[in-house]
Length: 146
Image 1 (tube, rainbow, N blue to C red):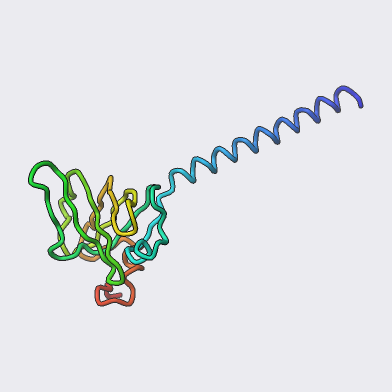
Image 2: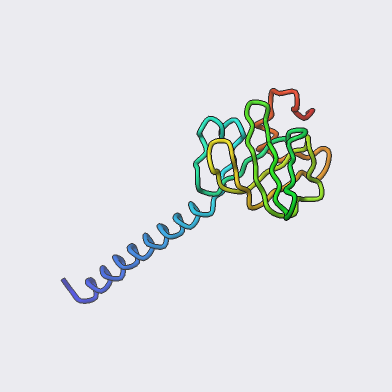
């Protein structure tokens, strides 16, 4: 084989290997940073993974919000009528957070009924509800009018 053909073949092989490594690392990074949404019903059914970061959303159950005597710890229940998940959060809740309103919590599941949240997001006006929450409430009495 002539030297210039051999050099060309080596360059092509190294390029393919380098591109493959880059694509693998990119895919791995995306997999680690994706926060999939699960409804409370899916969490209770065991469809959500325990450990990795996920999002859970629904309506805050009336009378379920419990603040700790000291500190910023709070726990509350979130439901989509078909299932309920208890959320533990340590921090300042959004101004729009209240019972009966839609929220999404980002965190890790401790078991099939408890999420330890690192972030809580509340809806921003009376008409808006996160699409995932609206989809999980479809067919219930809490469904938003079209």
